[in-house]
Image 1: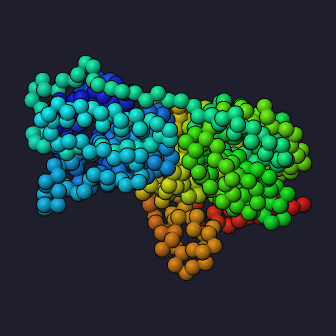
Image 2: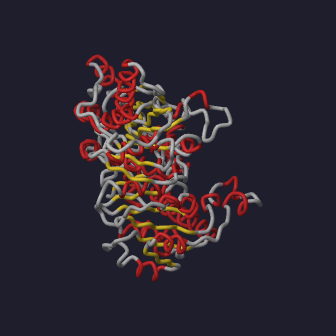
Image 3: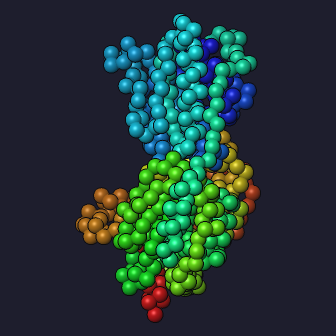
Length: 560
């Protein structure tokens, strides 16, 4: 491909609203790198580790709600994008993956940095495109611009997601002086978005069904905060028209919603009276395994609301997929829902009030550990800020600790521990608000290259729960009963974040008890030129004991 076609590609990206690109060093991708770096309206950053680069781009795109371009060289570099690509696909985050490649005739010929790159991401991208490796004819030039437009439109089309363009490039890669010239009016065609709504006939059928329903449970899945949605849910709950159960990643928690359900769901003596007649869901995944199991046994009908009408049968009770925008549907619901069971509403909220009234003092009385420490940290986290939370125990603790006012972000598309640091770093590049990363030691050290770059992150705060193991395995019956637990499941390690903090110039403090924690948090959220790490060192066996103790105490209170 001649250089003019690369500058056309980058100009089209800019014309279609792409404002950020994450570049990883390489020779084969040099034409792409230089064109992005020299474009006047695209902000570029270079991240050497492609695995981290892709998660950083994901963290940015998640907040910006627009595609971020990723550029890498040929060969295994493209494979290192894959974990973030899968996460972006299932979390419906738009990414534009631009992988430089060798011409087709050199693949599998013992030439350097060559793999089979076309369609390399399989079903984990919305589509893969292959650019021609020359533009001898005008039709080929037209083809290139058509592909780039189509790819970006597709990345933005609901449900959003990653798209891949593989770009074979021939030498020479480096332009002469004055050769990088962007077209003033690159060719573009746009996608006009619209909201999907059910037909009048469909709504009549739904209303007839609702007339015989007395116990409605609404489950918002993972999504960004939305004041319109929140207002509609709060109105339904306040008027006792429905029970709204909100995991922390739903970003729909309020005084009107159920947030502490993981403390009582799963108990056979409690759950029966809470079973719904109808489950309404929208958004993506939920965290709570106990909620999933409870609803799978509930014998209730399930309606899932999703604009593209794609069936999501999480609870194995799906009876209707409603192809509608959730705001439009919930607005209709508030106007068409009849009287519901007051007893059902009160049953859920009585448990919520009981746990809310007692959880604080229960945590205050247990021995110092990551559960109580995180609870105290959250009480000091700025209300107007963002929380990035790693998977495994970190996100479960957050869910158990109830209502949050901050936006909560987590890689729950695939729910892996990889990329948590990097996604949080990407988030800091999009906002001046404080971004608090809450993470365990395994996720933190696994993704340490997230910090290997030259860009300031003064708004990043890291709360590291370091129990020197994968502590969640002590709470799962299978591995916890095995003699190989510590070596092969927990993977015991003796690492400390002190060396990482020194290496990258972060402020650092370590605490081992409540007194030290309170002292360290006094200025943790104060202004800073550099990120800050608060390492909370605890014992994995003691954390497991405390977790079970708290669970038992709350159960006793609820069963009185």
